[in-house]
Length: 187
Image 1 (tube, helix red, strand yellow):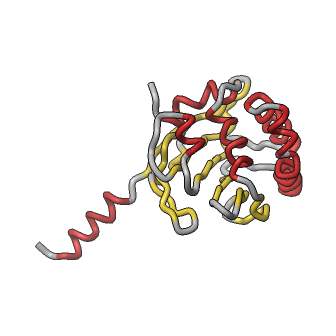
Image 2 (cartoon, one colour):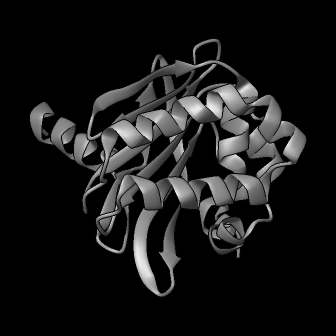
């Protein structure tokens, strides 16, 4: 057997992707120097409208929300927009979800980081259908925001800031209830 066809077949099988509602996300991505695995995909709807597909990437798969939140290493939340959303609407929704998923004391303590994120969202303006919004966490560096591959916010320090964001999708708030099982791959 020739080596080239074998290598080609191995590459084809290793480039797997998961798909939800027409959105394909890679099973594995690199975040800095760390490889992350797609833990799960979820569809965010609001008033029966499809808003985005979310993909949670972790160093290792888990079906436990607390384990995902506490897991050391890089993490990524990938959002692919299914409709146009203006910055004001996105900010209001995100603020409400943060409030539903975190204590008032935690939100007050994280106010500078939260305001830095919302300032970046306001600068971006509208997230168009098909836009890829990535929230990356790197230990020691913090949380960064990229839109369609362009960095929109310098990394914001604090492991607890990314955990507060991740609780939007993995805690007990209204957004999390809808998406948690899919992102964790639980029945």
